[in-house]
Amino acid sequence: MASHRKSRPSGTRAAGIRTPALATAALTSMALFSQTAEAAPSEDGKPSLEEVEKKVDALYRQAESATEKYNAAKERTGRQRKQVDTLLDDVARRTDRLNKAREALGSFAAAQYRTGASVPDTATFLLADTPQGYFDQDQLMSRLTARQKGAVDDYVTQQSATMRKRQEATQSLETFTETQDDLKTAKTTVRAKLASARELLSQLTAAEKARLAALEKQRQEAADRKAAELAKQQAAAADQGTSSSAASGSPASGTSSGSSSAYATKADKAIAFARAQIGKPYVWGATGPGSYDCSGLSQAAWKAAGVSLPRTTYDQVNAGTTVSLADARPGDLVFFYDDVSHVGIYIGDGMMIHAPKPGAYVREESIYYGGESIIHSVVRPA
Image (tube, rainbow, N blue to C red):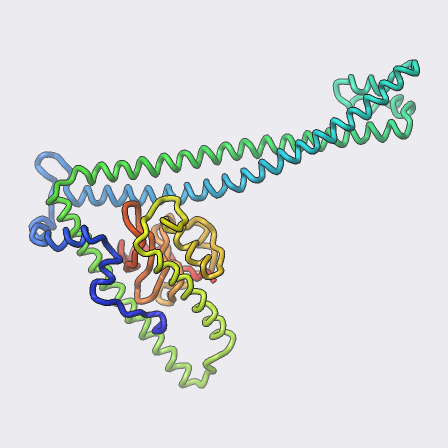
């Protein structure tokens, strides 16, 4: 644990957590905040600042959840598009073979007609409502030569295979269309939620925005204290584990320690990548390099360490080993909310790097930024 801790100069964490404008507003608004911490609904019927804040937070949460649905639909669309293209190419090839088989039958029909055959069997076969229906007649089998029968068999086989592939392509196209509809719905939902949040914030006065900044500062300070407590607990547990190993004479190296060292190496690379992205904007659906959403950042960070993660939080939460929060190690993924719609990269000392929400930037922040209750699970991806 100690090898992953990095000293942070005074003010560094604050710069990573919030923008200068927000921090300035927070520092200039403490007096106003002290007078309105217990704000009640206003007399003019407008919602209180706390109510606005809750609505905005809820809208951002809903937008982020819709973003993960958008990411999932976008990924499915990509896979299904390739599948449909492959099927259509296959249908085209089979149709070409079917046409050649039909031409072969046509040649036999023409030959029968020219020789004055009493019953042009092949021509009758081609004109039948269903090839199989006529094919079942015993007299056809008795009159066709071996070569003619081979041509009929080939035609029937090609026709059957082509029909199956056409049906499969049609079903894939229908599924692809449904996924595209899901994609459009998710995109519309994200935009609507963000527009509603911006509208609510635009109605705040300068004083209300200052008080909102003060509330944010207060929460961040509480989250930082909680992170410091976790850091102490983890350090104590690590020291106790080292002492126990020394007392029992357990070897310091082995399969377990080797595996731990390999993970730490990969985790260092993932964290280094994530740290290099600090300050880049959150953009829903983005996977870098100029902007990220939460799962886009975690995926890109671990890709830099040579580990392939799925695109969405819903899949990333299952792409590794679940560990307890007390056992969290740098590099682990911390998931949030019951719907697993947010993820951050743990860096030790109760802190993480994540792409928080629309309008914010990739930053270092306490894993308790929204309270302890929103932490869903911790997953070790490699």
